View (tube, rainbow, N blue to C red):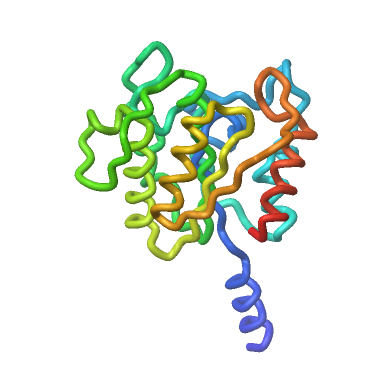
Length: 212
């Protein structure tokens, strides 16, 4: 009986972590098979899943991966590269795919910046699909859906380094509105536009330094 009780206590202390992301958080064999992945890639030195920022973080904390729903090239809003309608696979469309996590990392906005998606106006309710073609209302809608879908989960957003300022400022403002923790990355080494081994380690270290 003592052994069973001890085991249950230990299990209860292991937080489950889910990731909602884009190519920066992908790894073949971990994300859903129909999703586009970047890692591993011949133009980047990250070759093992253990080298990814999220795996490094989970191992450092002794946590467990619940779900990694990261899809390369995806935007938070419904407008992607070439003004393509991405409403079917953007971050909002994948809110329900995170399992039952204690901690959710949302690492996005990079493709919204790179694709020059519309920024739009700040809007905190009554979103339509058309509204969410722009970044600001889509980000607010995403956070609202996450908070309602996972009321007991801690949610943390990660903001990539070297993005254009309208995206950075929008992320700061909307996360502040919803009282969401935002980690703004800095000095991330990249190869082919994506974190290298050194860059992945730096992301993990910055999360740990933030007290997560």
